[in-house]
Image (cartoon, rainbow, N blue to C red):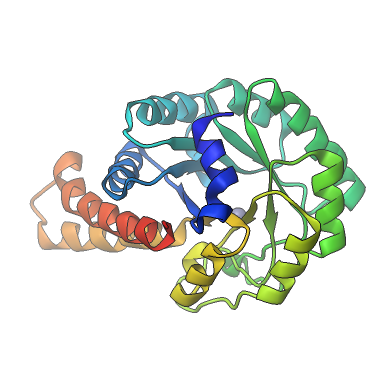
Length: 274
Ligand SMILES: [Zn+2]
């Protein structure tokens, strides 16, 4: 098993969580990796739907896996929320170390069937597969209530599809910018009782610090973080542009924002490590 995936398997027994960060460019990836090296902790660089619109999957795979290879700590390259089986296959062949097949909007039987297909392809490349059942809502789409993951669905999708990791919906919400979500730890424990794989929580930017600490003691082994870093990027770049109106060079404009971005990533990694 790849080292990063091994660390995710062991994370829950070590009271830590491996953060996956949605990154959108090579400067951000380097900043996250530097933060991980300073914290001596593993992280995943994740490619989400928006990033895939901006650049082809094979380019992300080549870029991030070469950055990962040079790092002093285990770095995963992860395909986030994907419903396209061909694209998943392309990611698997492009150096990704894990992929998420998102069948959460499908009937359970279809979700299981497609997840199993992905698991079969991924296994021969030693790539881990994350699935989802129940559905984590998106705050920016005005969704307030997702379908909570039921223990029964969790058990069947994990066992019948052979998933490596399972993303669950237990009160977590995607893309929260100011308010916080409330994790239902009872719902999480009910899922833990009937499954045996590492669990994944999406929407971790919107989770309270004390809930993150409690999650470290649970079977949750990976959290997805996007918004918290995207906010630092936008806010710090805007300040920089306004403060230095004569500067037009990308490298110069990115210098301070990327330093702040790295600090935020470092802070989040340290919160989640042992
Ligand atoms: Zn997600």
